[in-house]
Image (cartoon, rainbow, N blue to C red; front, side):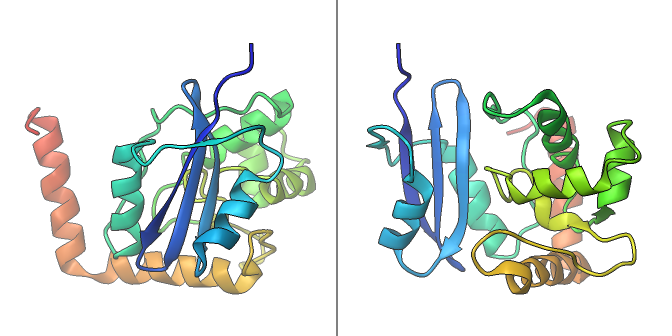
Length: 193
C-alpha cells in the first residue's frame, strides 16, 4: 500500500521553504525561493498525489523559520527522515553529514573518513549533490579540502552555499545568540519546557 505523501510550503525571512514527507518521516526539503508556486513545483516533482498539510512537521517549521531569522538552530537528530531510495553508502554519508553542527564545516574527504571510506571523497561529493533534505542534512557545510567552497546543487548554487555559511558564521558571532543557546541547553538539561 502506497503511503500518503504530505507537504507544506511556508514563508521564512529568506523566502518560501518546503517540506514533504509521510507518517514514516521527512522525504524532501527545499531551500527558500521567492515564489511559493515555483518552490511547490520543485519540491513535489515526481511525487505521487501529494496532499497539502499545513501542520506537517509543525515543530520543524518553527525551527526552520527561526533559523532564517538568525537563531542558532541545530536540527534535532531524532527528526525521522526517509532515505529508502539511497544505497547503504549514500545513507551512511547523509547520516554522517546530518551530524555537522551549525556554523561548522568539514571537507568531503573528512566526511569520507567519518564513514571509514577515506578514498571516497568524490563519491561523497556526488551524494551531497543528491541530498533530498538540504538544511536538515546540512550539505552546505561540506567544503573542499583546500578550504574553497566546492559545489552546491541547490537552486542558487555556490552563491547560496556561501550565503548560508556566512549567515551561520555571523549568527555565531552574535553574543546574544550564543547566550540564548546556552540558556536553551540549560533549560533542556533540567527538563523544563
